[in-house]
Amino acid sequence: MTTRTKKPAVGNGRAVEPDLDAAFERVMRLMRIPGTSGEEEEVARFVVDELRRAGAPATAVQFDDAHRRSPLQGSVGNLVFTLPGTLRGPRRLLMAHLDTVPLCVGCRPVRKKDVVVSDDPCTGLGADNRAGCAVLLTAALEILRRGLPHPPSTFLWAVQEEVGLHGSHYASLSKLGKPRLAFNWDGGPAEKLTIGATGAYRMTIEIKGLASHAGGAPEQGVSSIAIAGLAIADLQKHGWLGDVRKRGRHGTSNIGVIQGGAATNVVPDRVLMRAECRSHDSAFRKEILETFQTAFERAAGQVRSAAGATGEVRCQSQLDYDAFRLDAEEPCVLAAEAAVRAIGAEPMRAVTNGGLDANWLTARGIPTVTLGCGQQNVHTTSEQLDVPAFERACRIALRLATGSAG
Image (cartoon, rainbow, N blue to C red; front, side, top):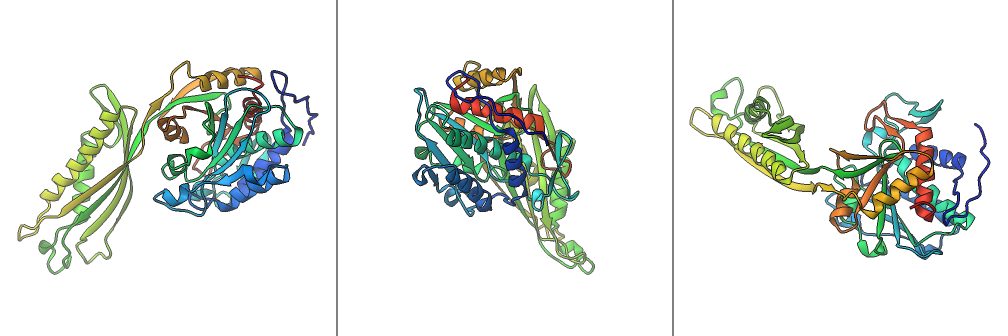
């Protein structure tokens, strides 16, 4: 590997360049650490140890109690590192999430030319979002080790993003120091600025039928699987499942989990399903949700036993996160664009149909723009990390952390 010569890093408008070889080694180490949602303690400990070795005061590194307030619970809360400023200016928040999806447990990252992949074909890479963690950690370590001038800064490594953005939802805002500019690192090219994202409901659908012997007395039963099948077919036929487009409005829906039945000779009396619906339009998102509920209730009335018994349906839903769209002149967006241009790239604004920690931070009063750090094909075994894009993300983040651009 080629060793790069570090350029002067003095901040306050002049060139600021991180040690990119060290950053690469850091992300490779982070991707090897298991840490799915709710089990982020080991990767959080790695970040803490690196900060402390670089001279971070113990009082500046702390955890909040987000894991105790989230539905998932978990082993550890959000990790927060705060720095008082040596330059005047508004406090900046830099953040990324710690967790990966279960597919990435056991990853063995290996570099192949300009990309990193998992050497195990059965696992994902976990660059989502260990690359973001490394980008933040690199910026913090450069400031600590090289004494770079910087405005007041807060670094936030959030937990439980992959299962509903729980870390940002339940983050203790009092520990963040009232940031005025906020930047989140997640998937995509380093130059991409995500300024808006969709909102989502998560649904649990429980169907109760009536068990009976499937050979001796099938007519005495009420099949919960038959009810589920009728409802799903109805939603599919009328365009409410998958890519949903109605009257000029757009959303998505998915049934991702179906559990039910115990044996082929028993009419199944229970099915549990988990589903979601998304849209940037909150009213349309609610309409998709209500259409799901109606379809299952209608199907329950269509499956009857010989005695006239029917099944029952119970639908529970919760708002995972609401949609948001940042104003074109939002200060964090303009600062991020200036940092991208400072490294010689051209920023691209985007809106996503996925959820981001920025959804909840923005909803809680901290407008947050999301930048990419090189992840591709996330949540699959073909996931890759684009190394040049990751390096550009490290350069952008250090400029934002030091205030040397934007």
